[in-house]
Image 1 (cartoon, helix red, strand yellow):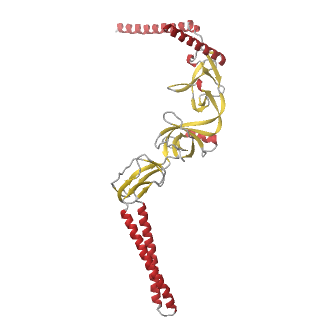
Image 2 (image 1 turned 90 degrees about the vertical axis):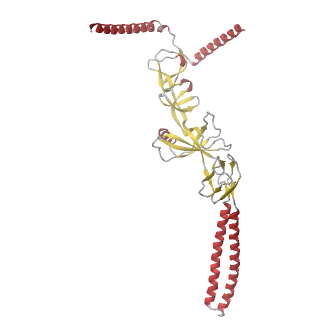
Length: 399
């Protein structure tokens, strides 16, 4: 038992000794060799505030202004289709033909009924005119006159009913030609020619309008509050830029012209909508895009040069100088760009000093040598010339 205790004590003593030796060696190296390290040359810039148009980025989705399901309004066999899937159509274009013969016959019968009743009504009006003269001279009884008048009035009512029936039959006949209610692009045909369709058959196809077209996007409640504060009004129309998934910018800017009347409780966002002109049909319903919404009014905010900002897994950061003039890593949040600067949302304030050039050689807490931009340019040009000469010499030797 005593032997085990002695072994444990020896192991602990040995571990302490090793740690002491390593620590002493590190201090020695840092003291004797660290002093020989030349501080990297850097340029710095003082953070200033600038009047900028602030912008807010968000994911968006393209949505057609009109999304119409084309349905049969009468029953019959689908005789013909006048388009191909994916075609662009205009409002009023005929899309399908439902067998019209039955409805043409019904219209013809209703028209004949009108002509028949009109003939009877014309005869009844003549009888009534004669009866009016005869009843004045007491040649016929008043009851006979009333009977002729009632018959004439009944025929007038029948004519109205027949006219309504004729109009209704023509309406049904017009439904045999299924027409596009809006301009747009045809989708997949759900019911093909030869099938019997009814009003309950469901969609024959769909039309999504293409110009103009909407883009909906969520804006965080925090950004919404900031935007409303900048513009002094939430219900403003604002410029919106659109970017495709590959990063390309859409060449026509849109107008944000609608926002929802509530904050989504599950996401903490406000749904907004922008309208874009789409004359070449580049934007498709359902497409995912990115948008950049611009405030109308300028606001004074800190800005930092783009070249001063680096990024890692934790986010964007800069090197600032502390009270001792030593660099320290400072994480920042940005909210869009203004020219060659990032608009700073948090992490920096006016008066802070950030390193703009020579960043790659900077170590947090290690001294730096601050030089002017002109001197840094000379150093950079000199290093570039040396590199070019070295490459030329290598090529010469290779030949």
